[in-house]
Image 1: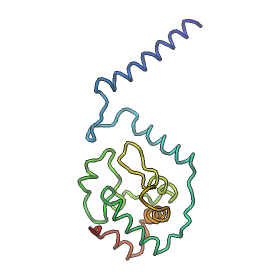
Image 2: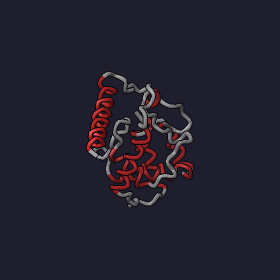
Image 3: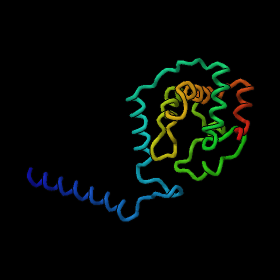
Length: 171
């Protein structure tokens, strides 16, 4: 039993030393164009979904009606489109240079299958090491819900809301 414990401790120390060396000597991919680290995507998604589950997915206090969806379209254009794109336009240079690449919500990679509460959590809190900022300090709760409802209903938007999402942001 004693030799097993010694072997276990040696293996643990060698593993920790190997992980340290991987990062310390520059083997870890840190550039946005570098490939992912082993298990990076799996572990990141596992942690993100565990945290969202722990915090609980809330129900929207707002209905997904036309005024809220239209307000969400304006918020999306002004704050989200630079990374997540606009309907009918190519990916921006900012989005093309990010890792991981931000989903282009109006180009086939929407979040209509995500509950609005999950999108609200991501927009409010951001996602570490992805470039996704948290907007909790710059947008109101109502604004966060409006953009979350917009994205949850992106596949069934009224024509005027679809048109608003396709317009370029006012500068």
